[in-house]
Image (cartoon, rainbow, N blue to C red; front, side, top):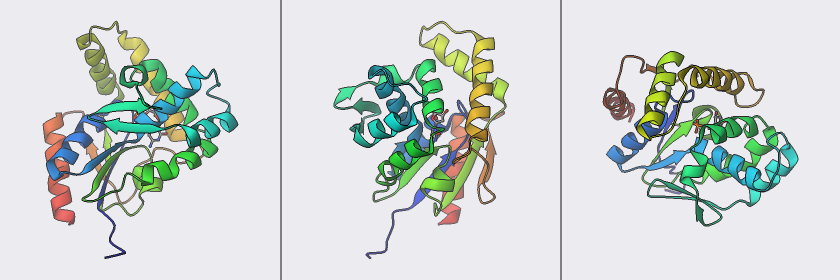
Length: 221
Ligand code: DC
């Protein structure tokens, strides 16, 4: 039994593709743990912002990444013991996360942090490199995507629903820029793996996407 590793479902894809909602529901269905890897990069961007460390300063960022205490509990994110969910969910921290994530030293510093989430009875992880770098042996890999205009509209609706101001054109431009940065970077870029199932949710709702993944995992195991 020493060699037994809990199963992993890797869900990678671009920003605002619905990965988070889908991954969390799949995790709940199977009673698995859930790793929101984007939140870890967001926590780092926020920690750096608080310490006035630039998102371009790879060396200091890697240091912060290896020292910061992170924790997720009941869907909330904690940094050094403080609940910071609302702070990391902003558009600005999304941009910051994408910027700090380009540095190889940062990704190396956060590698084991993410691997530690693999606990019995299993894990659903979402991000950009879960299936390619963090858990290349994942039993099921999904590439979850949707047309960029659809993703921008969903993000827009989400912000309006939260009572925040939103500008569709700006959101669209920001998503396009993030897609480019996340997929063009030298280390662990976002890409569809040959062994990943493509799940395009442009014409699908969350429930449909969740059911497809549940069925695919049942079939794969
Ligand atoms: O999924 P998200 O929007 O919360 O992610 C924020 C940023 O973090 C994303 O634009 C790129 C980066 N990220 C990454 O590089 N690798 C991951 N596995 C997850 C997120």
